[in-house]
Picture 1 (cartoon, rainbow, N blue to C red):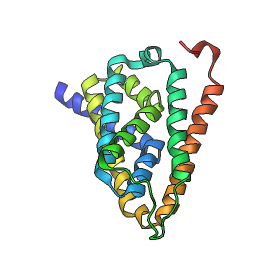
Picture 2 (cartoon, rainbow, N blue to C red; picture 1 turned 30 degrees about the horizontal axis):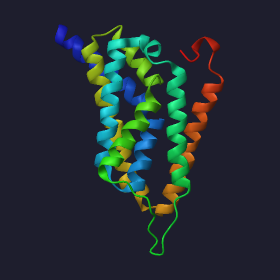
Picture 3 (cartoon, rainbow, N blue to C red; picture 1 turned 60 degrees about the vertical axis):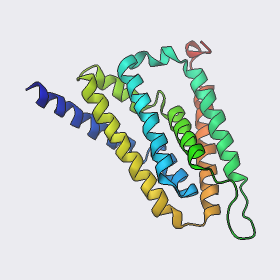
Length: 202
């Protein structure tokens, strides 16, 4: 009976998180990075590590995570990181052979995917949902279901980026990546400006 309830909680968590993440910014980041650099494995591994840590934090700390790391600093880091990557992408130029300079190696791509998704998803609706579910259902079941869901959506994003989007001209992908990253930086700045005064620096 307990085992059946555990699997039901895991399945419910997986379905809920998967539906919430389809087309969300983390999946779009996976798609763009995989398309831009033509390498799915480092992107997927970076995304998986980010989600494992985020889900673990959500289950362990629950809704107190925001008190552990002030939202102000999370938004500042997110705005800076996404702005830097966005400007770099927009400034990419084609060489005489039609190749775009500035490709990342496997390690750098792994770190990039991890950092961008970790910052983008910290305190996001997905992590809040995981924390809420962990307060109702077995924490291990929620963690398992949510992590599997996020791995699957990330894998779908990287696969689509490497296959479908990769057929587009590489320079276009750089421009699209730049627009996406700068937009996400702008969203972080907008949230920062509208941050309630009681959620200030500390």
